[in-house]
Length: 474
Image (cartoon, rainbow, N blue to C red; front, side):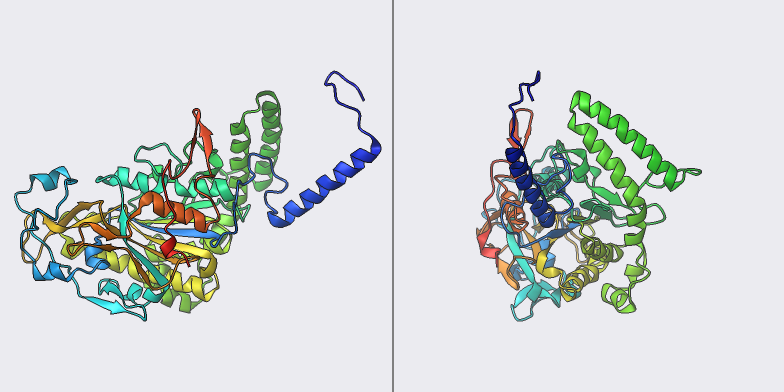
């Protein structure tokens, strides 16, 4: 029993006792999390830290920043004072260079009428007729604020907690923390609106986390994932044999170098092989019943539309995908807002509402969190010249709206408030770090404990900030 490793002798009794306990623990682990119980430490999930309210997230990203003053945050004074100069006492000192250069800043009324909706009396514009029908399912936060006044830094901050590229996105953190519920699909998937994508590939980054946690974009058309299919002349059996041989070589390399990236790379190869079957199945929506198409609207039959992507998002979470992001661009209305925002709302309104109701009727909404919103808000004054039929709104990071629905959040709640001009928050401020901490909490993850050591320090999604927004939790 003694050798050059100086192993201590072990009796037969001790061996059987310890191995029995080990097998028992392994059996228990396989029941709790069957996909990770027999995996390597590299692939094992970190959490959850406590019982989650949500098992999965669908984040509907409105890239470009929709105008909360035209959609959600009702301010009657904007109609009364339309065309009047915004008082200097209202404005802060955080303006874009364009706004600073403007000689005048006339107040702009909301385009369409607002009404109180549902039993909750939540205010919502006529621009969103389908979402207006389900306000009793929504939690509307009118008091979100962020750091940057420019698009890409604000988008990075929303999804990574940093304005500087290179950090893991929220989807990557959740994949790292919770692992996957389906070994045949990535735990983090993104869908872009065809012709109106808006989202940058940097918003899918795993940053310094293992590459297996990076978001995978599924495209519409014959090839949802580029380079996924086998080349002409290569059969499934040939590909399987190639991967088996590659696994042997990678195992030899890992035994020598113990480099975690070797395991991660092989994991990605195996996932790609399994996705050759799983992705075509999930992307094929032809078997959906007609009443589902009617719920999501006629656009849901057209691959790549926002409505079709909402339907795909439901199919993905049904199959255990942890984090699904939908991107819809074109919300940056510096001018021509009266013509552009109705078109954008028509693109996303029915699909967004249908997704929430479809999840509810299937019993999925009770453990799925749906998030709707952009990277910041818009100003209450016009950008550029205000005419009878044309105007725009500039960037406004100090107050905007995000919508939540589903697992763990109060229904029919309007949380937080802004001043009479919708310019500054006067009640229940919610920083992006606070919102992200709360989202992680709903997934059973403590945002202060889910960390990753990189370059000598421990990083997390919320940096060194973030407090739970307890007022929205059910």
